[in-house]
Length: 270
Image (cartoon, rainbow, N blue to C red):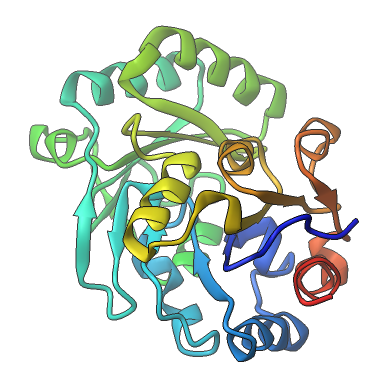
């Protein structure tokens, strides 16, 4: 299937989409992005990662657009200077943490500058540290200062059905006070209600002066569906669930088989 309209911007998720299973940028994916630049199509990144967790992608992909970290909780320029931050309300942060802990999940807290956790050896901590490129601050309890500066709360568990159930519970409990979406089967991200990937599309439309129907989006997780709905053309990765695939315009290969590059070459560059 080919895009039915002009594409001026491709907005991509990172983990499970742009990078492979080892979190590496493949040569083919890099070449695909540079191919977009050559024909005048802009390229932008959005992720549940903190902005600093995407800084190693800026130079190899020649990024010259705003980068949306924390699913749009913080927008930065390619030099990592902050354009805008969208914090969680403190009462929402406390409710999210309490609910996540009640489910027996681990709770992480991100501010604009720090990653705060309770246990250094907890599941996925080492993987996250390698992915984002900096170490967490370990505390017995989150301080009032941490809570007041929170940009994102993450619930972590390898019990995937439990994460999905907690997601639904938090969506009901927090209502319009926050966005609660899984960014991975084992991660539940809670952010400001205006910090979601659908809002990222609209922010880039405003900042770059590109019509929403000229934006293409690509991702693999339920939180990517929000940006699918706001864009003119959407692509689900082959490693996405059937639910996510059903809500995209097109489906590409998995991130194990350079599905991102395949999508750019087939659907965007033709």
